[in-house]
Amino acid sequence: MINTISRRAFLTGTAAAAGAALIPARTFEVFAQERRQPGPIADRITLRVLPFPMKQVRLLPGPMKNAADSSLKYLSSLPTDRLAHNFKVNVGLDSSAQPFGGWEKPDVELRGHFCGGHYLSACALSYASTGDETIKAKGDALVAELAKCQQRSGYLSAFPIEFFDRLRDQQRVWAPFYTIHKIMAGHLDMYTLTGNAQALETAQKMAGWAGDWTGPLSYDHMQRVLRTEYGGMGEVLGNLAAVSGRRDLFGTVRRFEKASFYDPLSERRDQLKGLHVNTHIPQVIAAARMYELTGDPRYRDIAEYFWYEVVGERSYCTGGTSNKEIWDTDAGKLSNALGPTTTEDCCAYNMMKLSRHLFGWSADPRFMDYYERLLFNHRLGTIDPETGTTMYYLPLQAGLWKTYATPYDSFWCCNGTGVEEFAKLNDTIYFHDDNSVYVNLYIASELQWPEKGLKLRQETNFPHEQGTTLTVTADRPSDVALRLRIPYWVAKGQVKVNGRVLPVFSSAGSYLTLPGPWKSGDKIELSLPMHLHAAPMPDDESVQAVMYGPLVLAGRLDEISRDRWYGDEGPKPEPATVPTIMADATNPVSWVEPAQAQQLVFKSVGQSQPLTLQPLATIVHQRYAVYWKVQNKA
Ligand SMILES: [Zn+2]
Image (tube, rainbow, N blue to C red):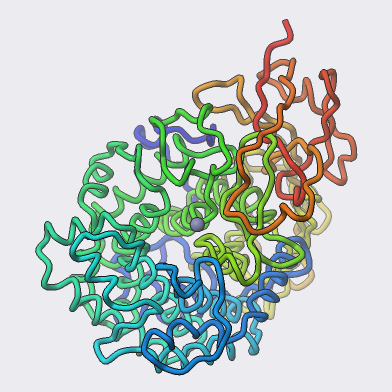
């Protein structure tokens, strides 16, 4: 749970947005190589801030770049003929390729979601992030192969169209539209991020097919269809409408709006209990995108209320949400909702995506505080450094461990969102308005803003370093303001410009504005001291995690043998007993102290058994404990 944000704070409307200038609706040019790239249909709302096109931001060496490199290596290792196999077989084309296993096995009903969907998105995002022509070529080759498999109706899938008959007749079927969404989004990303025109054509035909399939169904019948998971159909159709100018697609988007989910949210009622989490977050992303494209405030109400409710009432210390893939408790009741399948990784991916929309509307630093929480605790550290594969759940029950996918025989949903996530680690570090740069995240990277003749180089070993250094290169003196995020966890920071300490600083949870002018060689050194703090459960403060700055600390328990590192969808419940902590529950400093501060290693003080704590993201093959029962010593 995020203790700096509560439902009450939202309902009373305390918005602490930074003083951003309003900017005109984005143009096609501004958004080249950004995922929400519009074309003929521009946004109807005015955004306060925009992300930079991904090609203008490059990662520099550090933990994020290591993760991105390892994911790209994995992507590059997947052969095109194996990726296309099920699609070809589905339309009777010859394929002698060896099929993949896991959720891409030829008899699994979700087949195609990764191979023809997430994979293309990840190739496109990787190309935008790195400029790697080889990965673009792999994406292009697959787009060409899949185009051969598209039927005259526009249907493109690795499973037969009869699955949709079962969906229409309300017979048992896994999630056909979920898979169609991934394939459409993969193709659209190949167009918007790499310029592949054939991919746009494929996506357009698929949208036509989706319109033809849903059109004849009555409203009530379609609402019944929407009980089966359908991913981000609304989002991809909205994005496609924007780039193609096809307003008729908004009608198809509306067919994918589930009234029983949207209605209570628009009235600010939390009826989330019992819902499958990752089925629903993409529907809210669709609402957010439709708010941008239509200006209808109902969509905004849905997206904002949902975000505050999930983040404030249904999220753990890592920022992750879901238990057993559902919201299985009343709002704010999380202390008994700890198990082997807490916090599905897809949910983290999708909540980050939603947060970017809300940040664009408001420039409110709270969205970036939350983004950072997920990024440094739930994304970093969920990729296996050896194979580049990712996890399914991030278990938060004490004594469990991380289980990673196998390269060719898993292909869980979260491996799909995983390859996308690690291909776009550069997309949120910097945003901008008409004349300022928002430095949202402290990640070693370089930003180019050619329209302003400005380059920013960010050098940092964050979070091992408690701060960052920005160096300016400017063609001419630049009056672009730099707005540095001062995170919620900072107690006392400091900023130096060209070695001189500025007499002012901003409060935690805000942006510190440095107005310039800037010339080449100017150096900004930001110091963000971290300290230990507790992250208690909302319904039981004696159950709590320890954090250091943005980092959730985990107790490092015994090693896991290699045969248990990979393959299962999640560890079997086999929790270890961890000691009850006897300490002051309001103050983690009373029982945790730095052991090797530089390495972010901590140790327990005065407990029945000695414990070593380190950032959860740096645990790889060990059992761990995140939440502790803390009893007052008295
Ligand atoms: Zn998943």
